Amino acid sequence: MKTKLKIGITCYPTVGGSGAIATELGKQLAEKGHEIHFITSSLPFRLNRMHPNIYYHQVEVNQYSVFQYPPYDIALASKMAEIINRENLDLLHVHYAIPHAVCAILAKQMSKSDVKIVTTLHGTDITVLGYDSTLTGAIRFGIEKSDAVTAVSSSLTAQTYDVIKPEKTIEVVYNFIDERVYRLTDSSYLREEYGIKRHEKVVIHVSNFRGVKRVQDVVKAFARISEEIPSKLLLVGDGPEMTVVCTLVKQLGIEDKVLLLGKQDNLEELYSLSDLMLLLSEKESFGLVALEAMACGVPCIGTNIGGIPEVITNGINGYLCKLGDIETIAKKGINLLSDQELHARFSKEAVNSAYTNFRSEIIVTQYENIYYELLKKV
Ligand code: GMT
Image (cartoon, rainbow, N blue to C red):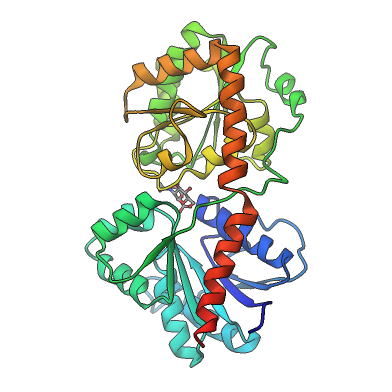
């Protein structure tokens, strides 16, 4: 059996955890000698420089006036079929069930090849879209017709069986970090640029500012923390909740303590100057940002929701709190930020856990083994 594979990868290429993981996986697989073909609507955001062994195929959608909606799914399936045949792909690894898994199945039929399909479920494709009756059947179809299906946490696997009820084995493959990037780096120059004083602690939140992220809870918890601890809050990202978040910041009178940084690259630099991350979501299948922050030595307070408890170990490398329990979240935050010895211990444990359980080498090998297992059956 050949060991260097030709792999097509499809994901949402714009900012978001699933696109980040799909792209990082592609980069790591390419480094291991596999040939990677990204088939996406635009260049994935983390594919920001040339990589040998990586090719990018853009999906173009026809805007013909008869179409009420541009037929993206058909265009994607056609592109996948074209690349399967032209590049002789061994498998397609699609991230996010809808529409990618269904498009891959269609592409396989169009190409008349025996390309294998691996689908990775990331979260909202199940926990939000799975409840939409117009999509449930298609999601189940995509899962059942894939050759292998993975989910990024045990919690997401359980929820998939619960909501979608597929007859299919779903394997848990956790998200991972690129340990060459996510490590404590010297970004102290940023403190001065952002006007953060020496004695001030830094609390960080990174998300796409959608309702499920409960950014307002982050602001409320921080407001309480900052009453006791001189601190600044870095809000990183942008999205639909931004306006209400800004209004809340004003109402609470903490404008001078909150920095709205918008979307940012090089998050490791921001994590490296942070003392605490808050991830207070009401839905979160994994919480990649928490893992990336932990790898840079930042303890996290997260909600006891979805896959977050598989990333944060309560009382060891961070804290888990009930959704919306601002008082407890703030108390734990104050505790952690005011006790140097406790903070140092949590920080060390956070790095340990990120590097031990979620190291890229372990997770990428798990994916490779899934690929080899499928291709053995050919
Ligand atoms: O969190 C989001 O809204 C983005 C979403 C995505 O599809 O990119 O993230 C999901 O996938 C990430 C990578 O597997 C996970 O770390 C996030 O927890 C998950 N988001 C949710 O479940 C809300």
